[in-house]
Image 1 (cartoon, rainbow, N blue to C red):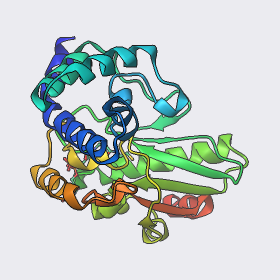
Image 2 (image 1 turned 180 degrees about the horizontal axis):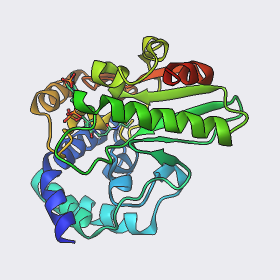
Image 3 (image 1 turned 60 degrees about the vertical axis):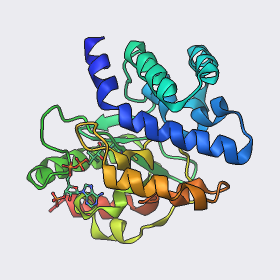
Length: 249
Ligand SMILES: CC(C)(COP(=O)(O)OP(=O)(O)OC[C@H]1O[C@@H](n2cnc3c(N)ncnc32)[C@H](O)[C@@H]1OP(=O)(O)O)[C@@H](O)C(=O)NCCC(=O)NCCS
């Protein structure tokens, strides 16, 4: 609990940014704020309730009911911090297996395996720092071997994230995979594939990216708001065999 209170303090600016975005979308579209906070922020996951597309927690309603009664952004941010501080810890998604910072989902009907990145390092050095390249590549090599061993139908690895804008991230993967990047359409905003870009590895906000995003609100296309993020999520894919060959060296 004291730890979650400390994290709630660190995440204050990120909560505020997401609430400002949801409020702006609510005003522009006439959609209730509670609905937008569910679909267009990552709070449901942050509160430890998991992916909202897999079911909305009954406890979520208590959060949005109170949120709707509050008058301004300051009160809404404070309430979000309080709710977060007493919420259960986030757990890794049960349907994914993790290897260091990387996880994968079971293949879909076309043999496509979706991968994910979460900072699971418990130290002061960012997980993408150059000193950790070897460690991250060995996470990936282990994950690729596990995909081959446990998913006979797996054929392709796919990612969707803002992270593919970064050379510091792409350098961990086979060059063909990074080179395949193109804008993702549409992008779900209830996870980290867009929101993750505003965070440093300590959980603090990146002010320049936040300010660029806030300035884009007035010209935002509310039917495709993911395009207004400073680093819009990119989609990438490459055959599993390309990964195996790359990490075999
Ligand atoms: C990914 C994350 C750890 C990056 O945090 P960070 O404090 O910026 O970075 P790290 O210290 O790990 O990495 C630093 C490297 O990334 C580069 N980098 C990070 N953000 C960058 C940006 N916006 N533009 C360019 N380069 C960037 C740095 O230049 C550095 O590269 P270098 O080692 O070659 O100098 C942080 O954003 C995070 O935890 N996000 C949430 C998780 C997430 O987004 N997951 C995506 C799920 S789809």
